[in-house]
Image 1 (cartoon, rainbow, N blue to C red):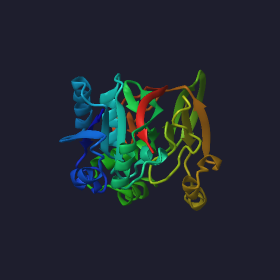
Image 2 (cartoon, helix red, strand yellow; image 1 turned 120 degrees about the vertical axis):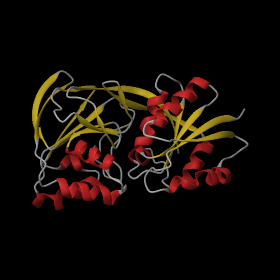
Image 3 (cartoon, rainbow, N blue to C red; image 1 turned 90 degrees about the vertical axis):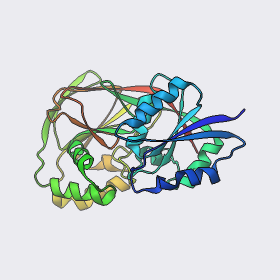
Length: 292
């Protein structure tokens, strides 16, 4: 019996590799095993609406996100409460979740993963009433995501430009947190709450994070002096960021932040206005996903 897939394509995601997706699908999908349909998003968060419609129709076995981490988040948000399986063809800028899952970044090779239809179960994180599939962040991380949302350009260069522009003037904040019942107060440049191990671009902000361990990896980063950046930045790419003297690391089932005064959060690479009190909790093995 054939499986039926719905591809939801973000036509403006990342660096544009998704623009030939229908041609690649025609060549790459094993049509003896899979039937498929293709829909395109037309506005922000339209992917969530399309995914919810697909769930309600009940005729699809999997929904495939063709885009970046933000596109994945939208589609998973629309799948909440269903038994639907997620597929990913990474066409975004960072592609953090796809990299962590070892899904090929070349769309033609990612399509091969779908043909094999190997299903794994991974965790998701809830932030208040929102889903986080990969990583969320507050402080400077949220500032960068907010600025990227307003930027015309995408990609690593655009991120780097914003970071270098805002870094000199952005001030640390003192955050009050409850981590599995233990209340702490920390002055931080940013804090990450990770399900996946990285932001994207192979930058492993939470190198010990596992997608199926039922835990949130909390990475509290104080302001890194410019003189320390040449020593600290490479740790992101060497999977040892936790070794930096500027990092404090926790693993937890639940975390509450009481005073996110800027109200913005980076949710899977997208700046979102959430509020001042943030409640994170892990839902173990709550998402089925197609993997190599």
